[in-house]
Image (cartoon, rainbow, N blue to C red):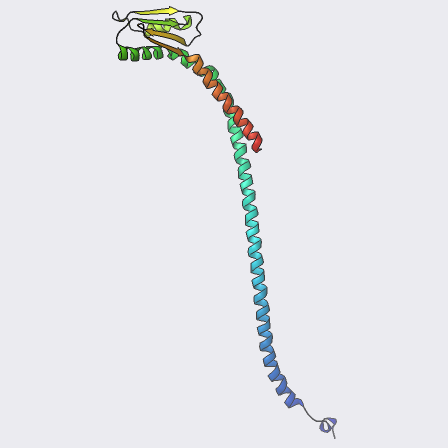
Length: 199
């Protein structure tokens, strides 16, 4: 008699129980695995989003710093390039323009005064360097006697104008040029100081 016949066979009932238990356990395991996977995915997504936001913020801040630095460098370069040119304009070009246009300015002011107050004797006191240009441009009008008197105490660009006995005007292009030079100098000093403070 074989040994297998002596022993009770639990195989059929165990197979049925294992199969029933296995289906329930598998479903629980699937559900548990889904929950763990879902939770891990959610945590990974939240962490990735936080990391991405932090990285974007850092990149944005770095780009802003770089832009600010680039702007400051570009502005400083422009100012450094402009300064010699502006000084040349103030020191050479504007005085020449003032010299070349002084006679026209004086004639224009004189015509305005005559239009407002009528023909009266005119006296112009001017620096000797500017007298010839003024004589050349003023009209020779017998109804408006004009005297041009040279005064070496006046600087080039300074003119004193008298119309009759009541109207007196003074033109001082040197003062205007000086004010422009002071303004330009102040601008470059202030800008230089501002660039040092923001560097």
